[in-house]
Length: 358
Image (tube, rainbow, N blue to C red; front, side, top):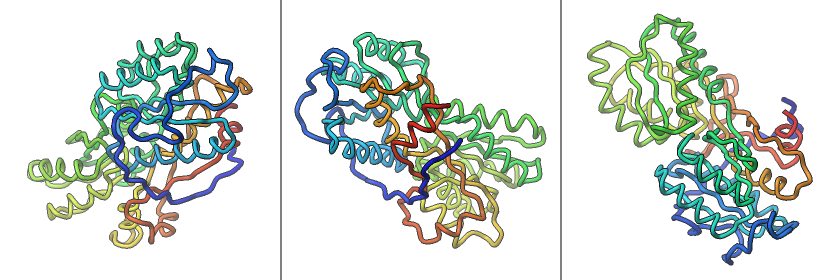
């Protein structure tokens, strides 16, 4: 995939807590005036953004990038307002938020879904009302609605890439822990599929535990602290850990606190882990960081406005690239801030050049 413009940046994370519907907005606080399709608007779009969860730095960064893109487009008059809502992993609450956006007659709705199936009906409802729905990050969802546009990571390929690397690194045999995301989440299900697919080639690797962490370091450390004593007693040693992101450094801490040998731990793009890997990891410690990219929040805003403009042939299915950091790259992150996320960022032209022409 050609990238016309790629800048490896370290993204500082906004730690603002998002309250339910319209508690945090970008732009004015006036009520939306109606959908672009119904009003024939050529700008001044009002966009609703329903995030199933924002309780970790990744989701907060995604919202930060979405806000930055919205601020950019406000200067051109294309966007008037983005209204953020957070569902706290409650599918019913997310459905209600989307229904509220429909009643407000926003011009487009961006959804980071908590389920691949629970939102099918309400997304159809939005489409029937003439409101484009941009599904981002944790999709795709099950939908055949005309006005649904899905921007997804290839979670299967992402986790297969990481698991292959860890499996080879531990010699194709031994014990492995799989740290998962949020139970019932579409991305988590696909990511788990990637792990399973990879391990078909390694029958001598035994997954001794699957632990849901919500991609959150604090929860990962707590859950591992509870699980490790019994696992170490039963198996003696853990050889590898694969994870979806957000909990790599917490895994390091959990093993250190348990007084256990450090396994080969799949890396993520958080500053805590990258700084540890670059500065404190045992000499020659090898792993791979394979992570989704929170810049897709900006991508969703750009796609929404391009769909509303009617000037671009926007495909209904798009795949966003994930990011990889190797042991040869990690030294550039030795001074990264703890709360930072290392991610490539792009621009609007990159979206049009790369995602619209897949």
